[in-house]
Amino acid sequence: MTSPTTPAPAPVWLPAWEAADGAARVRALFTATFDAEPAGTFSAPGRVNLIGEHTDYNGGLALPIAIEHRTWAAVSLREDSRVRLVSAQGQGVWECDLDEVAPGTVQGWGAYLAGVAWALRQSGRTVPGFEVAVDSCVPFGAGLSSSAALEASLAIGLDSLLGLGLGGDDEGRVVLAAACVRAENEIAGAATGGMDQAASLRARDGFALALDCLDSSVHHEPFAPEGCELLVIDTRAPHSLNDGQYASRRATCDAAAEALGVPTLRHWLDAAEGGVDGAVAAADAVLTDDVARRRVRHVLTEIDRTRRAHVAMRAGDWGAFGVLMDASHTSLRDDYEVTVPELDVAVEAARAAGALGARMTGGGFGGSSIALVPAGTSAAVADAVVAAYADHGFGAPAFLTSRAAGPAA
Image (tube, rainbow, N blue to C red; front, top):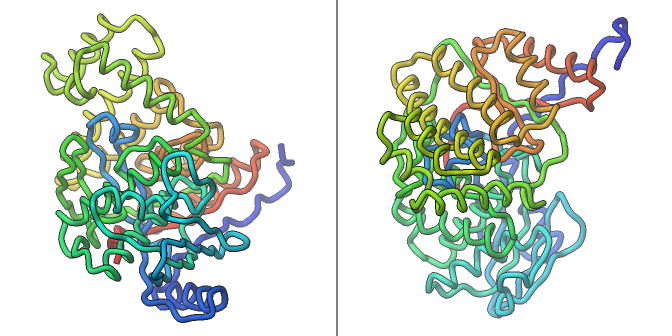
């Protein structure tokens, strides 16, 4: 704990890069590494999920936005099946033979990119080897979909260079997003849902992506909260989705759906009498394990909260939206048990400093919180969060703000 007389450090802000700067960075890295000019440069955004957490793999609803922070990829195709990758955030060149890529065969950050090419091959496309240089201002490990941004930047690049014709409309981008999901699930070994990839590839500048994960349909809703701004708090707490905790939550939900006799928990909610309360009560009557009951309660109520948040967004009722954000975090903390103290303290401090609502975003177990704050107060709220972290003896967090940005391009 810090002394009351010791001032808290100034907040650290993480700006987004200008597009020309991001492209220049990866071109320079590509040329320095591979002694050639790339065939093209591409980028894809990270995302913030406004509400609808751990619902995607349950057939539920989510409401993400793409953020201005992006991953850039400089890409060239090869005539053989060799894959060579370099990252400004790593050391050395990561290599593999694309012909030998299969579940369980590759490790490390390159698996996310090699997995995209593997998945496109699995869908019947012809994909040769390639060389890629990547750089990113999406904070790594912050729960802002740095992995999906990495996958999507290559997916849109391969689509362009190979002339696959998928990036030109939403129907084709659904295919690219599915390839990215397979890459993450089957090659990189992270059992995530598809919300992150959908946001990175299918978002629209200035709009939130109202995503129905049951059929992958989307609606684009204007996101420009009048009188408010969105503050993102990178807790800098250790964060990983492939350490078993995320997969455990997903396995519990899958087993619960099977016990309830439905394909997904969304099916249970939609078929239940008495709305979400009736669905929760009926599930409690069938499930015998208390942990499963709490996990299911979170999913069912979170889908319902996301529906109501969508209505509040359309009505411009940001007070109601903030209340739903608060309830979402409480459910994620108590029923789904995916928060950590750093996330909880960030949320509590933001609320105390005047946020209309605050919640963790992303898979949890570290990562980021978001706060919907009155316009012009992000700096003051950030100061309050930094002070609260210092009081708890936590390492300093970092902050960013973003409007709803455009997709991979």
